Length: 290
Image 1 (spheres, rainbow, N blue to C red):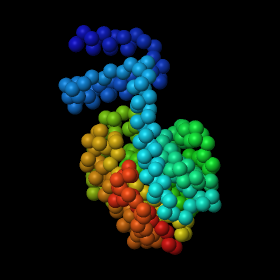
Image 2 (cartoon, helix red, strand yellow):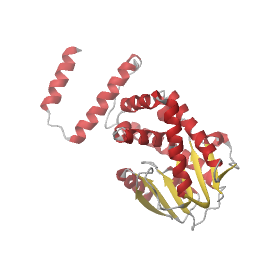
Image 3 (cartoon, one colour):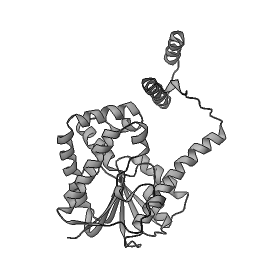
Image 4 (spheres, rainbow, N blue to C red):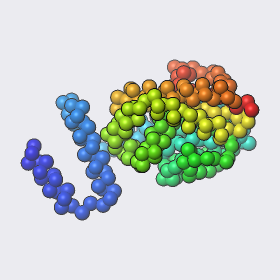
């Protein structure tokens, strides 16, 4: 084993690897390290055949099926709202996966969706993905840090499982850390969450107020804010139970904050939990009354 590791180190040093190749190698090595820590080699190894077409399509379909289930859940939720082609819709920090856009596609929406994200690459990929479906609505991208002041107001803003991402983004930026590392390196994500939880009560209070202020600002009078926060695949795979509970507590406190000011909580109607990706307890529809 030691000889093999020595040989691997020498081989890496000899190869003139591109930045992209080094990045992929680093991810693989981090995955091996994490598997060693969790004793996962006691049950299975990492084996991947690049030309295994059935396995490649199985993985791809699994991702698409998950996105579709989340989107269909959202289409059920959004069908309760008065949405037409004049409705100005904002998708909050969607990342690479067009879950809200797929939901609107299922609903036959014909207006305009604005997606706001600090990552241009993810927004471009999202637009390319949706182009495969030829939606009847227009997608406008807005490269912006959500914690920066927004002048625009929207009749409907939707955020699918964004509270944990906003928490990480806010405290990482405060610490001068690029959050892209968290989504490329599992251990970096786990380690930074530990930092956030060190000052749990203080950080929870701070981020709750920051996010609440954002939502108060971006929703037009008479408009709607729809949010979900459920236990994600990543939460389950990385055993982020404490981290999930922290995000969930922030989610609950944000709702209470908004209801103490200008928002009322609307019950989600026609929601059959057995057919949905997440439960009615994981989502909220708030209406701004002033």
